[in-house]
Every structure is written in C-alpha cells, then in structure tokens.
Amino acid sequence: MRKIFLLLITLLTMNIAYSQASVKKVKPVKANAYVNIHMDIIYLNKDSYDLLDQNNKNHYDVKDITIYNMIKGEKIKVNKPHMDYPNNHFIFKDATTNTNYLRVFLESEKVLVQLDDKTTDTVKCTIKKTKGYTHIEKVWYNDSLYYKFGTDIPQIITIVK
Image 1 (cartoon, rainbow, N blue to C red):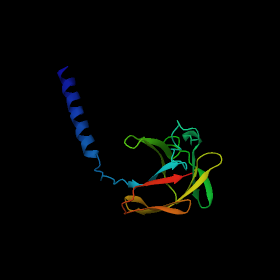
Image 2 (cartoon, helix red, strand yellow; image 1 turned 120 degrees about the vertical axis):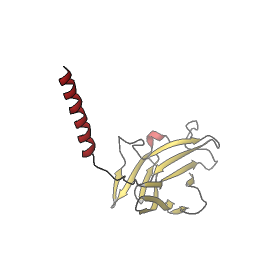
Image 3 (cartoon, rainbow, N blue to C red; image 1 turned 30 degrees about the vertical axis):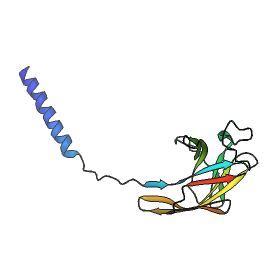
Image 4 (cartoon, one colour; image 1 turned 45 degrees about the horizontal axis):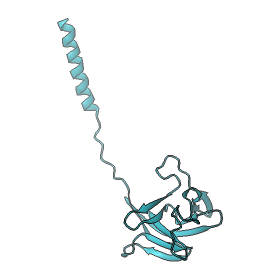
C-alpha cells in the first residue's frame, strides 16, 4: 500500500512539473479602444415636445426604429442578435434633464435612421481608425454638420421635426 501511495505521489509531481514546463508564455493582446462610435439624438417637435417620450401622443416608438448601414451603395439592415444592442440603437432617459435620447452606433460612414414608416433620416460621418483606436471625426444629420471631434460640442444632436 505504501508503494502505491509513493507511486501516485511521484506521478502527480511529475505531471505537475511537465504541465508547467509545457505552458507557453503568451504576450497580452491589445484591444481596440472605441472612444465615441455613437451619436445621441434628441427629437423634438416644433413646440419642443419630446418625440421619444412614450407619454406624448405623437412619438417615435423604439420598436419602429430601424437602423441601416449603407455599404458600397447597398442598404443593409442592422441585425446582430447576439449583441447587447442588436439593432445598433436604444433609447435612454437622462435623469437630470428628463430628456430622452436615441443612441445610434455608427459603424459605417452612412447610416439611415428609419424612425417610422414615413420618416427616414441620413447620418453621415467620418470615422478615424488608427492602431488600437477608433473615433468619429465629424457627423452630419440630413446634410447639416452637427459634430466635430475635438471641440467642446457634446456628442448630442437635437433635431426638430
């Protein structure tokens, strides 16, 4: 019995030593840093009513909003079922200002925001990609420049409908 115990201890020790010797040293991989690949949009009507507020009569419903990426002239509906935001957008409310925002993630330089079956707007942007760093340089909403990187302007667009 004692010989079996010693044999097991010896095999276990050899196995641990072999396992540690065979472990490869792996250098850490640097992840890309996505600084600001989104734009927050406030929609108001001409009387300054929040068009994303579900309590207002004529509002845009999140389930009706669809995002399309324009890639090489082709309109591609965003649908990534395994992502946190599979359609590249969500609505959130700022507790301090009580304002609703539509956050749109901009993956391509031309994005169509279909708010309902009658209204589709165009967001164009320039995206700067360098090694390990991606950010939005400029953003146009329906051909009007609203955002430029490096200025004190927040990444918020207010659109009056």
